[in-house]
Image 1 (cartoon, rainbow, N blue to C red):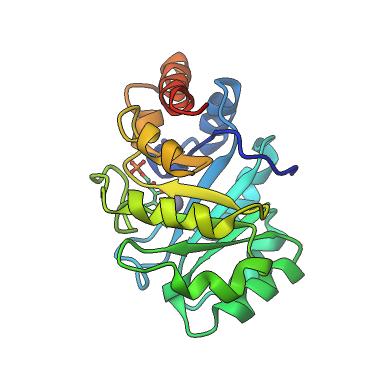
Image 2: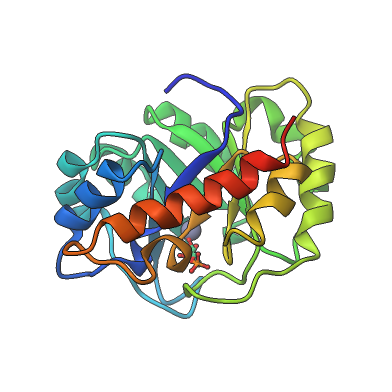
Length: 230
Ligand code: DX5
Ligand code: ZN
């Protein structure tokens, strides 16, 4: 994974056909996505349950780009090694998931993954100040985590703008997760985000039998985001 700030589209397989992950991943990659976003939910940190390390290991051989694993689980630390072994490239934990995010980020890097930290919509950026040298990605949640297809929370635009200034020249990705469409993507690109997660925004209207819809959805989000960059 080489670092750059170009716009990256990361479809969330939370909106894919759960009976068909392998083909869905092949379809979105063939249609031009940059990363594959994998939403792990535990029914405890968030009010929904998805899948765990075994599913991640099973889909890993289908992912040729970047496997971006978003852990919405509490606790995190006992499961880091299992997700690293499953082949996660980026492993993101929530700041709110425990009192020792510093230790969690250390453990993620020690397991050989890029370390991400995610912030719920109500969480400020001040707690990141002393973590910046141990973070590879900051994920700003633009919906409350737990479900796809929710409405974009506009107050997060200001958070991303402040984060972009805090990050400066450091090689830290700013990722946005939730409610991304061709209408909301440019707001976040202009504010300084480079990784745009989109579940319903990519998968809506398409299927493995109609993969070109995925391609046009991906291109529409990318074009809208890139249009506001110089
Ligand atoms: C929400 C997940 C998101 C979700 C985004 O808890 O972290 O990745 O899949 O879905 P959309 O793009 O439909 O808001
Ligand atoms: Zn996510």
